[in-house]
Length: 316
Length: 306
Image 1 (tube, chains in turn yellow, red):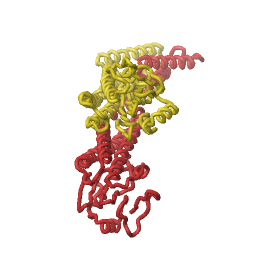
Image 2 (cartoon, helix red, strand yellow; image 1 turned 135 degrees about the vertical axis):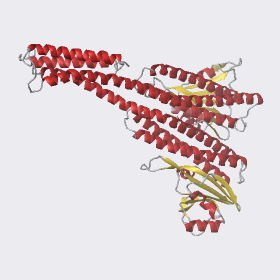
Image 3 (cartoon, chains in turn purple, green; image 1 turned 45 degrees about the vertical axis):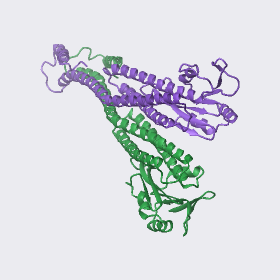
Image 4 (tube, chains in turn red, brown; image 1 turned 180 degrees about the horizontal axis):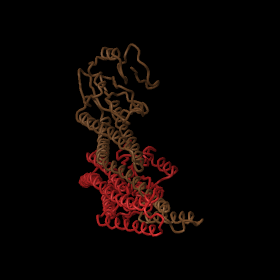
């Protein structure tokens, strides 16, 4: 989807006319035709677009004579993910391209933070302020990571409650998948922290003194978020062992109950087998003996049931 | 094997006389080849042999106008090997206008450089080679990650330890990568701070990019291997649980089967039993057995144990 924004005279961002000077072009999940059109019109290499749309792309900078591409990773939730089978959050590369008179934003999927950014939620900007827009995007991404970390924490809390009574691996695998999301976040964040440090020396993007401060703050923020994510990942993966042990204990208490039941059921079978032997048995011709034996069976089974229940063999 | 790169013809074997400029590639060289290069190019033998020691550390060495940059590259292993990747040392030696690369085995990184346009300026070519090496590490990391994901999916159903061993082996590759990348970062720091080679600002920028890429790759490898190490216990526990779940199902089947057995035991008794001479009694007992067994099954299902 191709949208073009420009700032009007009052400094508001409006859906602009066609590729005018200083426009912001956003390409969200673009068709090949759209990419071709923009690449040819603004003289930007096709490789820039392909890199930004490649799901495995890492955060980095790429330059040629008059264009600059910055690739960043944003956190995205996986739609309708079954937590036990899939990773709930991934990271997705988005590219921001500084062309001589335009800014192009490229992403493979619709990301809410881009719409918020263009709506001015991060701060005001004019469509010709490329560096400013990029910095606001950096800030939006850092906040988005914070939010997603919160979501993951809430999920972990929910799973912890379930885990107390769980004896299936489902919850354990859900935790493992959440932990994987943290790994994706952690690697993307540390890669971006390294990239921002590189941007701060100002050789790739011209940065004014006041923006320099802003970038420094964002770089620190990202580095802190990276450290925090790494800490969460570490603690979650260490906790996982404890959870695994809990699940295992729960499962073993189920096994205990089942074995107890099997033992109780063996009693009538055993008595029946004794009286089926083809040897002379006392009172085997009397009808009363059947009644007596049946009562004995029921009594023994009931007695064992009570005994085992008292001994907590029949309770989880 | 001693080859020289021609922009028009690609790789060509070198005959008796060595060129004085360009890119010379030595793969698993014989003693004669090492001797020939050392003699004709005036490069110390130990510089040429540096990367043939599989435990060589990444470093920068200069010796009589020849500069050696030794870094590590990923080395894909055959499918029969246990780990998917190892690392191997690769040295780039620059003497005047000649760039010599020495390696125990040919590497994808060299092909990637040839795929671009090979620079004639030595410092530029060195930067290209290092960039290709960093890129190759990223590819290898992606491959290992994909393999790990596959093994993790197998784990969900597994009751054998094979998958845990697989993960351990993949982790060996990751640990190797992390160590090598850490040393590569040191070498690139050295090159960026004070390169022994005269280089343009453009080349210097490329080196900075390679440094960033290597740092990122190191962070990825370190995070992944730390995480896998931590998760190993959880995975073993998952397998143990899978096994216990199987035991649980088997116990349930034993209990369900005990019902018809009990009934048969009762009516096997040699005492007089009610209705034992009726023709329909067998069918009746069978029905009772089936009904009771299915009731027990439903009870287990209701408690979501089965």
